[in-house]
Structures are given as C-alpha cells and as structure tokens.
Amino acid sequence: MKLVIVGGGGFRVPQIVEVLAQARAGAGSHAHLVVDELCLYDVSARRLSAMRAILTDLAFPHAPAVTTTTELREAVRGADFVFSAIRVGGTGGRIVDERVALDQGVLGQETVGPGGYAYAFRTIPVAVDLARVVRDLAPEAWVINFTNPAGIITQAMRTVLGRRVVGICDTPIGLVRRACAALGVDPREAARPRGRVEFDYAGLNHLGWLRRLTVDGVDRLPELLARDDLLDAIEEVRAIGVDWVRALGVLPNEYLFYYYLNRESVARIRREDETRGQFLDRQQTAFFDAVTADPGRAGELWVCAHGEREATYMAESRAESQRSARREEDIAAGGYQEVALDFMTAVATGSPARMILNVANSDRRDDGGAGLTVPQLREDAVVEVPCLVGDDGAHPQDVAPVSGPELGLVTAVKACEELVIEATLRGDFDLAWRAVAAHPLVDSVEVARRIVEGYVRNSPEVARVFGQ
Image (cartoon, rainbow, N blue to C red; front, side, top):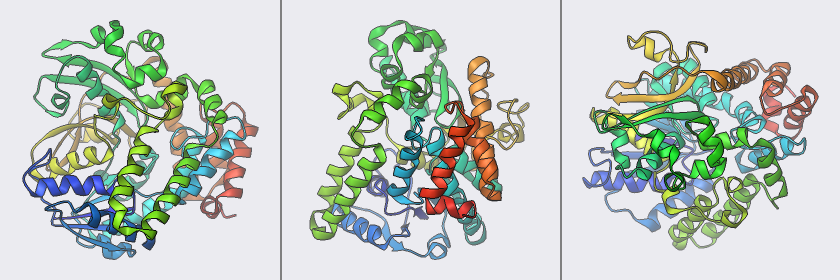
C-alpha cells in the first residue's frame, strides 16, 4: 500500500512515520495498517533533504520504504491514500495573512476570519489542481485533507473528488477525549462505534460544539459543566471561561475563543513581540539552517523544535504566565496525524471507527438518511460532524438540530466560506471583498476592502488569483 504526503517536508511527517513503523511491527494504535511505500512530495527540495536527514537520524525500526520527489504526478501515480498538508506561500505567507488584518485592528489568525480567507485564496487553486491529478492518476485513492482552512479547502476539492476526500482536524475529537478523561472514562471509548460513549458534536471546521456526552446511557455533560474541578481539566474551558461555557450549556471548540473573546484575543496578539507566523518563520529558518549545517543531529533538532511548537500552540488563549507551556493532558489527545491514520486504518482494514470529520451536508441523505445534516445550509456545504468510517469511507451520523445563536454563526460563516471559494475560482475581487466584509469579526466594509487590497499587494499568490 502506498501513502503519499503532499507537503512532505512538513513537521508532522516524523510522527506519521513513527506510527507507520510501529504498525508494520504489529504494535501501537494502528497495528493492522501496513504501508509498504511512503512517498514525500514537496515543492522544496531543501525541506525534503532535511526530512530525509531527520528520518535517517531517528531511524524508526520497521519504517516503510521512503521516497521523495518534487514532481507531483510522479508522487501521486499508484497512490492508495494521499495526505494533503500544503502551505502555499510558506510561513512568509502566513505572516502576511496575520499582519495585514492586525494592522486594520482585525483578528489576524491562520484559519479564523480574514487571515484564514487569505490562506484559502492562495491555496484553493493548488488544492483543486492536486485533486485533478489524483482523479487522473489515482482515481481509487482516498484524499485526507490536513490543509487549513480545512472546511473551505475540503469543499473546494470535493468539486473534483466528491466523497473520496475528507477533511480532518484534531480539535473536535480532542475535546471529546478531554471531556471523557475529566469524567474518568477511557478516552479511547469515543472512537468505538458500539462502546460505552456516545456524543453529539456539530458545526463547521474550527466552529463547533460538543452538546451531549453519554456514558453507559446517561448524558454526563450536565455533571461535567456543574463541577469546577472537572472543567479545569479541559483546555477549551480555561481559555473561553467557565461562566460563559456554563451559560452556553455546551463545550465549545477551542477556536471559538476567537469569536467569544475577539476583542481580547486581538489585543493579546497585538501586544506580543511577534505573531504566530513570525515565530514559526523564525523557528523554521533556524531549524533548517541547523539541519543543513549538521544533518547528523537532525532528529534531535526536530524533537526540540517540535516540542517548542506544541508548547506554544494558541498561546494567546492562555494566561500570560502559561504562554510558553501547555498542560500534559491538553496535548495527550493526539494530533492531526492520529486522526488521519485512524481514518486510513478504518478504510484499509474495514475495522469501523467513529470520528469527527469534514464531510458534505448531503452525505447523510445520500446514505439513506432523512434530509441534510444542517438543513439551513446548501447540499454541498462541508460540515464537521461525527461519522462512522469503514472500508467504503465516511458516513455522517444523526446529530441534533443546530439552532439559536449557534445556527446564526454557522450559517453566516459558511456563507462567507462559499463566497471565498467562488471568488477564488472566478478570480473576482469584489466577491473576495464581500466574503471578508460579511465575516462576523469584521465590522466595516471599508476595513474589509483595505484588508483584501493588502493581501493582493503583499501576497504574490493572492495577487495572481485576482489578476493583479
């Protein structure tokens, strides 16, 4: 079986190889998954060279054969699974995404708001081209999209690949697992289709809520919400605030921090010496320089750099004294790579798993269910909901209706996302302006115009999309 990682010079690759190596030895959480060839594709030969040095130094026993290439068609041909983990424009592009919005007093963040839309403007054309290459050279392959903003990119890729592409994110299932752990329940139960745990989660990527958590037939979410000691174990609650979470009566995805505390998040980010993109750009430049200079220490250097990235993730959502570190339980739920490999294992082995995935609103109806998952959204709208995954892919499960303010936020943001896709595919500046202006975190159409103009002016990839 052949796995291709598009964006094969990325920081998550060693974690994926480690799990694949354990699986080939019949051990670990994916013991029945056997990958014979791992092909790393990247546009940067330097990053691929560094990744080879890292993997050589880490020397995972039983790892699959690893090949590298800068030719996409060569990489994709014959693939069974494709992980899409691309960053068009690199960390320099992310800096532009953040700074242009922040300079206008608006949230500058990788996936939420205008920064996420700038990332999408750059990425959609490349992602759609990738989908076409997969369709032509590996039509039976499954594409698992890591690339942010995951809901938008997955929806764009589905125009070519349909149900053979799913979007993944580790934050929803991480929230479920943290809630289980707080209640003293084995977090692994969340993935078992007929286990002790059932849950209801619904929304969009980086915009969803855990609304029910049933253990042995009893909804224990009210108990969790009532106890300070249990809520303290949940990173999302500490970031957003106990009182507001109790007022909601549900557990929000951590990225709702940027909506519920938008003013505070913008102020915190603007007070920092550097944005997240600037931090990553500085760290990665130093890391690749160090690996080039001393490839024999590549594994050690990667471990240190990866640990620093994990510890400082979403630092602006934590108290200043806790910015440089996260609690052990906050990072124990796994990451993107675990979710991707869970999906891959369920499809490849036929052993069913329950996951939270980005799938189309109509997929449930197409499976024989009654109506759309969120009836207020378009059929092709990508939503983030629990799914059962087996050898024939992902099957969305029934969820309770999304209603009230949550529905208003979901419909407003999804409408903006659809404008982003249309604007990019048509190269239409005015549609891009409308998408940014309509976002709930942008309070002025003139500010929105200045932001889009700033992206066109400062990002060559965005400029090309809009014919500048």
